[in-house]
Length: 124
Image 1 (cartoon, rainbow, N blue to C red):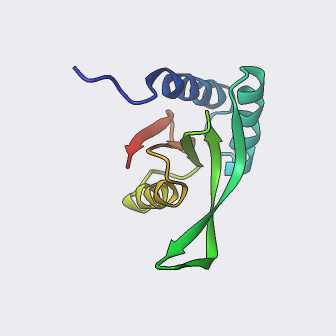
Image 2 (cartoon, rainbow, N blue to C red):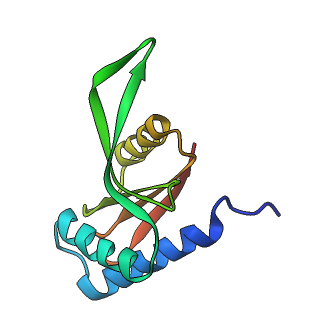
């Protein structure tokens, strides 16, 4: 059986997201979960950047529009957090766009807005 790409790093991040959801539950806005997750990332010495900006290339130019990924952990994992009723294909497409713009291969889409934490591992 093939190994998951960045398996250990992914499990660490998901574990921290579960901790945040366990303590805060559902019902907060995305910024609250982001602040709590940032606390956990720092406390657990996981390298990350918050609100990483990515330009969008089109042919031979860079468009004036750009993307902001909620977090980039371990310099390779796009971590997109949501606080909505349920994830849809729109959020998955958004994460795929962030992966394409960043040229990273792995994204984690995490939703804190449900009774239990929901997440999807997205590979580009």
